[in-house]
Length: 82
Image (cartoon, rainbow, N blue to C red; front, side, top):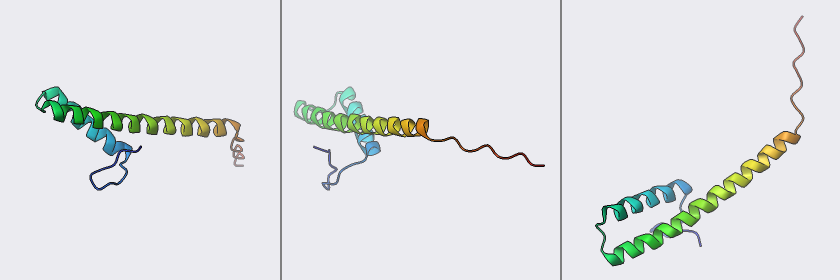
């Protein structure tokens, strides 16, 4: 399940990362109540899974592009000017 924002829209990697950082800061300050801390932790786990999944997908795409680049013919050398 992809984490959603308050409007029910799927969030980007960058938005998920920012929200996760905010959750970590709040938990580190120790101010949330126990119930709030549990809810924050659960949301943090959702966001972490989203971020890791997107990073894995990006890594796979980069590896595929690198394989294609290795198999591609190099550009022809420019002919020297006379």
